[in-house]
Length: 200
Image 1 (cartoon, rainbow, N blue to C red):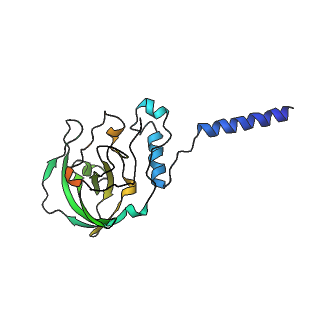
Image 2: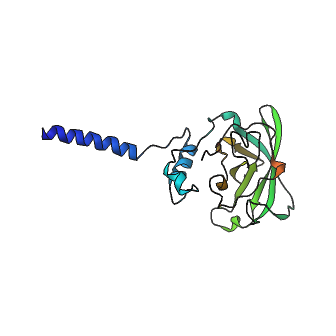
Image 3: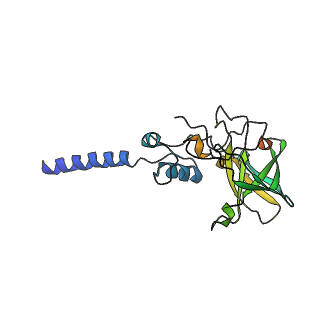
């Protein structure tokens, strides 16, 4: 009798613990890492009320069509400028280069930037910032556009993986100050890849 009771207790505990340590969704390693960071209260941009019920970000299905090799051209003698943000903060950036690529049979161009202050931080010396707008904004994806992280390439090409496009933190919490995507980085098509709009 005692043995049976112990087995039932063990079974209940195992089920309860498994529910407690819910495995966060994610089709790719990047998606799983994003979800883990958002679930972690020490890193998450989510408000407390959203964090409590967070079960995972909503992603477009991974699509290799949206992994492109772009021709990278360095912008010579680019001048520093103050990039507008969602607050009155004006961080200094420089246009680092131009990326030309083909997506779904059409040619496109995006400008890529470097944050002047960020390059002084260890580990960010070669960090580049690729913000973009597309025709999913305001519907399937965040209205203010999305970002992709990049590093300075060694040669004259760079891989752009739109499956790793993510929302600015202000999509989740208005306390954050986020760079506003320059209008010149608008892609006139639906980029159905990366993180979708956050449903609060």
